[in-house]
Amino acid sequence: MQKEDCIFCKLANGEIPTTLVYETDKVAAFNDANPKMPIHVLVVPKDHYASLSDDIPAELLGALMKAVPEVAKATGIYESGYRVVINTGDDANQTVKHVHVHVIGGAQMQ
Image (tube, rainbow, N blue to C red; front, side, top):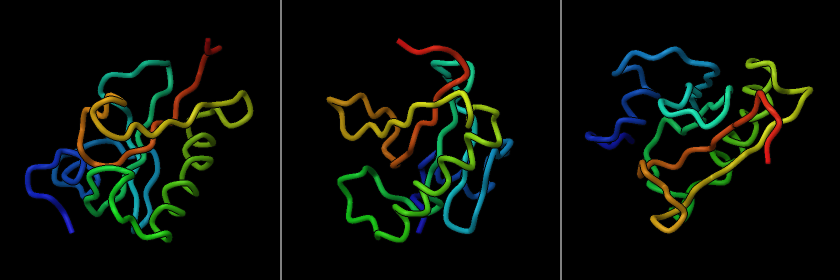
């Protein structure tokens, strides 16, 4: 199920055009609009869940995590290393209320 006003739902389901880095029937991955590193991709479920605190089915959580190394391979950071982050809630600076996994790399991190 999608949330009508959610930009990530629209991007993941093709309602707003974007270049997908990776896609399955359950998840989509696209470049972050405000990247923090040379490679900064978001992996999102096609169904709407506001945050990791929602009752997300284990199968979907598995699909999100399975996508991470595939995104790393597709973007050329698999061998050099990458960081995986999920911000949950306002105190964690979750700016879009649709659960998403940041896959970040392409340079040495602090």
